[in-house]
Image 1 (cartoon, rainbow, N blue to C red):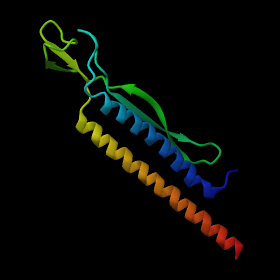
Image 2 (image 1 turned 45 degrees about the horizontal axis):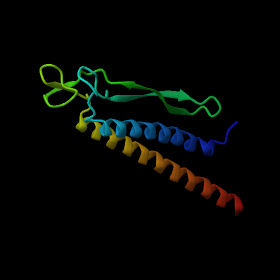
Image 3 (image 1 turned 60 degrees about the vertical axis):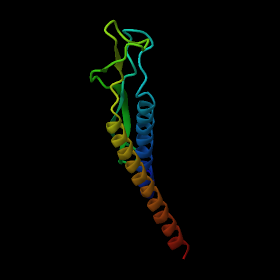
Image 4 (image 1 turned 180 degrees about the horizontal axis):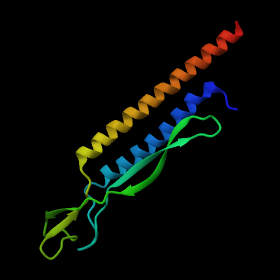
Length: 138
């Protein structure tokens, strides 16, 4: 059986990994927010989404989180009138990515706060472990 003092570290580590993946995907969405298709009629960048799943660690009995998958957002693309763009259709409209910056910034902020909360759990768990070691030495 695993040491119960390590439970919070394992749980926080799973949260850190999940939120790190989420921040990477959000960053990719932001970077490609203006990426159109390369030719007329081709689709532009499609927003990616991250789904999480709870997972029971059988060794520790701790509830952890993991990335279940990275999918694509099926909301429709935005059409912008830009007849000079090589990706424009016959009417002069260009399909733009379905990335909304406000949503991405909110997702990034939430992922960042969750990441910071997990960092605090790691710090506190380390403090408790160090205090336990100090008590055992006395």
